[in-house]
Image (cartoon, rainbow, N blue to C red; front, side, top):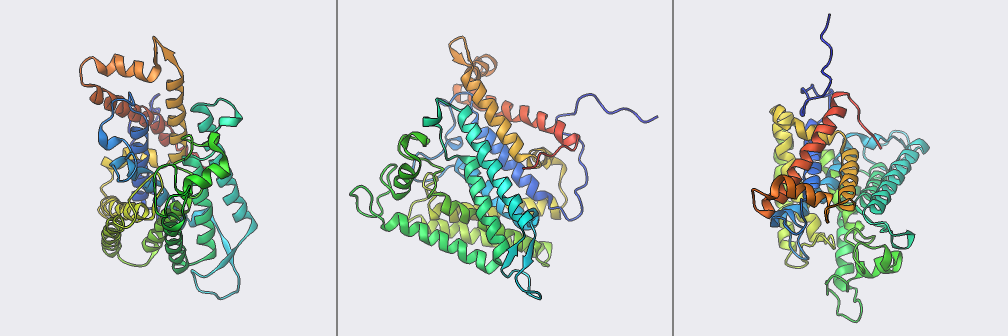
Length: 393
């Protein structure tokens, strides 16, 4: 008689072969990004965080500023590799691949449903993180931006080919740069980019109202700055086309790494004309972070899918196959800890103080708490992975 399955799943379940044709490196890259999100978003104390794990105050970048654009890049790659789960009917029979198509109604319905669910989940998370009533509910957010980028990139994937998608990407970046560089705000000369007096902040205040933004008068995930974030997603869409080509694995890897290096250098050069700035999601920030994403993805692809080095990366696969679920649950858990008081501290600070603060420095204790929180969710997601439960939106 076969032995029964263990009652509890191990922290990292046994590795299984990837389905035929599946690019496991995308799961690894996605899982690495999600793990970094949880780490950055959940220190033991916001007053004691190592500098690389904090976002740049304004201009410039830190490793923490790479996480969100990496995820949007991954969304774009997945749209192409999976066809976004989409189908489309050619406008005319006999058209070559990559020309404009007319999406069928079920496809549009799936896009709309996913977009609406992501946006709604984002609003729910915003409510959990400090809801004082409808008049102060933050409307923009991380999942809201992902939803809008997915929506537009999916439609462009269906309606255009790689050349059209590249043209849209360049057009979005050039148009957004022009808005920031040439539109004067509040009597300041064009190109003045402080936190409150720029065209993105002005649009967000007019569109949402000051009470619905992350900061009093501006939002880092606002409406207008989502335009260049769509371009970030399109970088991923184009990378997906490259991977789907008939080129050899070596050529694909070298191509991703080479193009990524060139794009990253272009972003640094562009920084001289318009600063790299995550809060504004400037065009230079898009180009620079897309280059970084291409290089890191090339490394993941070479190690995981070409060289078949998989076991060390399995924890990231566990995160990568349930990315939205673990992001939503971990964020909700963090909000619950912040809202729960215990002995004049919130639960997050109390746990950090009891477990780590007594034997190490405050920043190290804060980091250890964050690492422990990542491992906690790895254990939870490993149960789903072992049971083959993948929560799709």
